Image 1 (cartoon, helix red, strand yellow):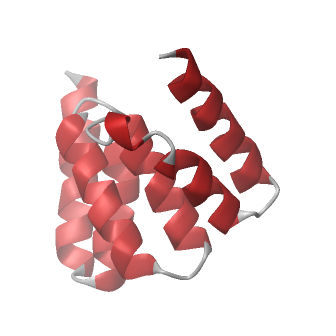
Image 2: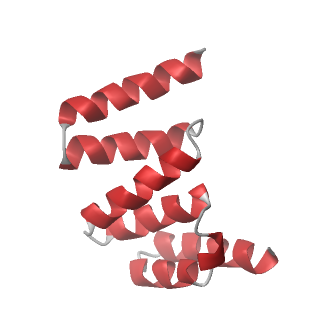
Amino acid sequence: ALATQVNFLLAEVSLSLRDYAGARDRLSHSKSDADSSDYHFLMGEAFENDSQSAIALEHYATAARLAPSDGLKVARYARSIAQQKSPGRGIRLMHAAYRSHQE
């Protein structure tokens, strides 16, 4: 558990330093936590910032599925959908996420 937290923090530092491969490497050490929404969200960030948007979309989709009440994760997934697949669908997902957080 502590090692996973440390790897997540190091991945976030790597992302802030624009070391996207380093962030993915740190996260790969946490593969046992691969069913974590945080793992998939950070992997999505690392792939997206490294111009690998199709792989990022897969990770954002998983993060949103695992944490449907996390507005940031759902919004990032919706934005990716809007940019890569269907602008209308992405906007509908954003509106739905916004409405669910207003209730």
